[in-house]
Every structure is written in structure tokens, then in C-alpha cells.
Image (cartoon, rainbow, N blue to C red; front, side, top):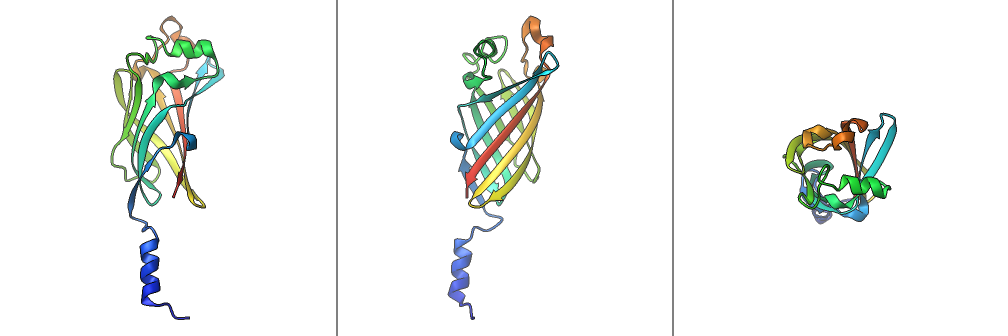
Length: 177
């Protein structure tokens, strides 16, 4: 079987080159943004955010850049009293600081994304370890990051010692290729 020049040219045009760069919008219906922290040193409190937007720039499966804006008042731990406490001026204070923002640097690593995480009035470097897997027409990105609450002035006032300083953040994103 002889492959014509036009068949090869058509294949090259239709196939996305490995090194090409493409920007994807983060779709909240295909994304989970969650966190967990220890309470009383033993209880694992989990929560999530439901309203966020952003974009991801990919070269093949390499994440080049990430930009995410999370609405702080959409925090949900499944406990209305805890959520109310997390929305006070002692903790997230979304009336004054409505957004949590993550902006990555230009990334060259296939396993980590470095960027600036801004919560309330503090900004610090955060490193998100990530993995990318192709699943048919979808690219599944999963990531984990640990932050220290005191790096972001997040405390519970008189009850601060009851909650671990380390908060684990988990992200799972499904992108249609």
C-alpha cells in the first residue's frame, strides 16, 4: 500500500503536534477543588469550593501555565456552622477578600507546577504536584498541594490550636482534547 503525499500532509494537519500549545478553560462541572485538614488532631475535615474559573495552557500533556480564581464564599464542608465560621473575618472573610487566586509561573516540569497562591491579604509560593493521563478523548489532570494556614494569616482565633496548620489541597480536572 502506497501512502500518498497528500495523505501524509492531511495527517500532519489533523493531528495536534506534541509541542503545540493550547489554552483550555477550566469547567467547574468537570473539575473538583477540595481540601482537608485535621481537627482535634484526629478528625479529617474535608471541604470543597463550588464556584471558580480559570484556564490551563498545555503543550501536549505538559501543564505550562495555570490561572484560577476561586470564590471564597462557596466553601462547603458539609457543616453549616463550620462554613459560617470559615466565612467570618477571623478566617476567609469573603466580604473583604472575595477571591482566592492561583497564578503559576511558566512551567517546564512534568510533575510540579509552581505559582503564587493568594488568600485574604497574603500571597505565597505554592507547589502543586500533578499527574496527567490521557483517557480516550480526555486528559485527566490530578494534583495535590500542602499549604500552611499561618502563611496566609488563616487562624481560628482562640480555637486556632484545634485545627492543624497544614491544609491539603486536591484538584482533579477533566479536559476534552
